[in-house]
Image 1 (cartoon, helix red, strand yellow):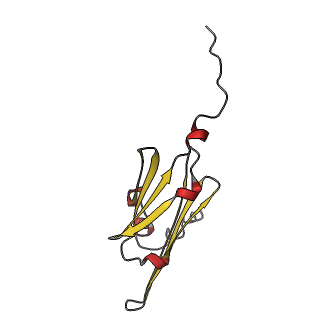
Image 2: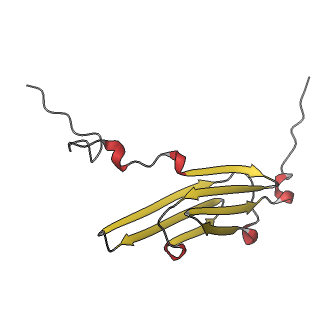
Image 3: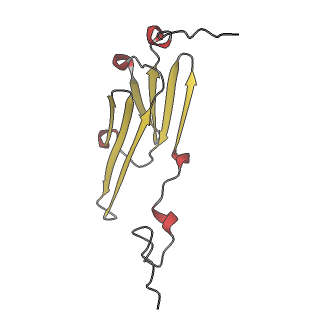
Length: 122
């Protein structure tokens, strides 16, 4: 007699779709424009005071926690974004408007050109 296989996720043993608890990558847009990265994250229903944006060694952390006392629910959001170029961390700007958090991260020019050029042999 074969033993039942364990559920692959914590929702696997429940009779509900696992997609109910997943957030896709479509909740944000990240692009490079005019010598800066622009990150736009959809966070409807949050108050700006419930959001935290922090920079730590090449990684941008976006977090939020919202409690709806009327409905008795709590929403949390946390995502990390790593950047391939050096950012002017003192010039990072964040704005929250109409449910969208927009973060602008200026690229450091002197760092973009640093490195060692490798000679190509032919």
